[in-house]
Image: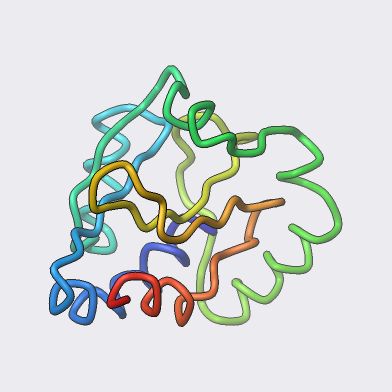
Length: 134
């Protein structure tokens, strides 16, 4: 549910990212078939990659844990997401792995970073856009 919510929100700013020459890329922890199903249902407008061994998640120091996914903050965000029309569909990948949003480049610079502290803890897209158009 939260991945769909985040992807929909990012899709809403894709035009602004494109205008700034910023590529929208998603990295999931599931299978290639799961990523394909995910992209077909949204549809997701950016590039999508699969990192089933979680090495990219570890490299970016992203949170992972049962309580991070099922704790009270996540439950409250889940209720809000459902009120906004998002539903939990078929899952794929590591359910306990949290995500994040990063604006990278040029070179090896990280211009913006947000590591989800819990499921549903999404980045402020205004800050993402500000870092992208710099």
